[in-house]
Image (cartoon, rainbow, N blue to C red; front, side, top):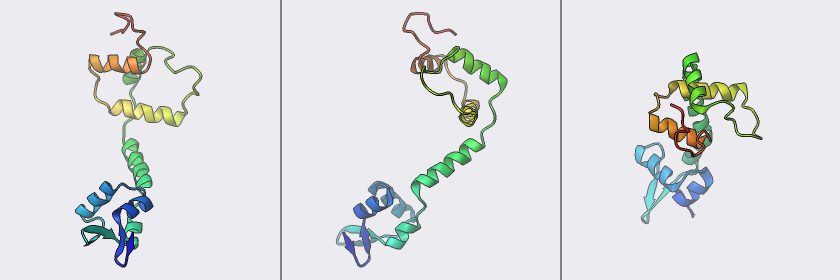
Length: 138
């Protein structure tokens, strides 16, 4: 519903690609101006359009975070290889690009050491556990 002072949050949500809850949060923090009329909140078109694109913002944030991660050391690469075992790439799937491999390396390098339980869970998720007792190498 539109009124002279703007559009209601439901319409703003549909138009902006954000949830009503996200819009309420932006209003609460002062990032988005709103007026209350008849018990409902309304925002101006101009204010809604001035918000950064949520998808673009996430991509930019991810690029900043991943870009700052250190390269994976040879030791960590070997540890990851040992944990996952040889040839653990799923059959029929394409090989990762060098860029994807580099991103994975940065993620693993920045991660804290895994506990035994976490390593076992990771093996199971990635297909490194055949379900037999003692099949998980330590």
